[in-house]
Image (cartoon, rainbow, N blue to C red; front, side, top):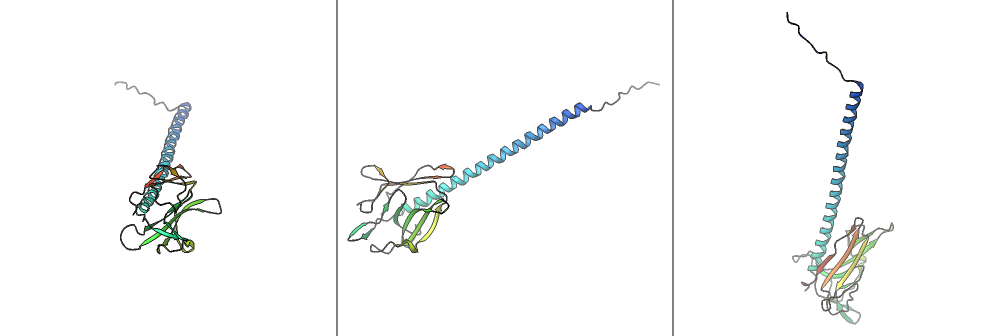
Length: 203
């Protein structure tokens, strides 16, 4: 009879088991760290996308309203002045509502900062129906909406088409309208790109 040689199976030692457990724990920790990094990156990307969408919505809304601006006059005391004025805080102008079509008619728009008791500032839109050159600007019954919440910086600028100079004051007594309007905005995430709107199509 032939002798069959067998090799006794050797089990893991305690040291080898501890090393294996340590390696497994390190791999699991790295996996969870990776998942956390991915989650934070996706959260940052989501915030960036939401902010970009907010900038786009505000820019498009202002662009449509300024593009539809009407060159009208109103009576101020014994003189007629243009139905457009602005300063560093806000601006007033006349445009149709809605922008296209005959429904709704002309309205007077006013953009101003809305300050809350807790210190927050929103960009507010006020609208009243346009009632001719002799209308009184009574904002107590205006339709009010919030265009942008929690504004940290809000500065309006107006460019003179003849000189090319920018200023933060455009008086209604001026004979013309600004060539362009620029608004500088910052929110809780930082400074926006400057929003610039030409008024070349004003009519």
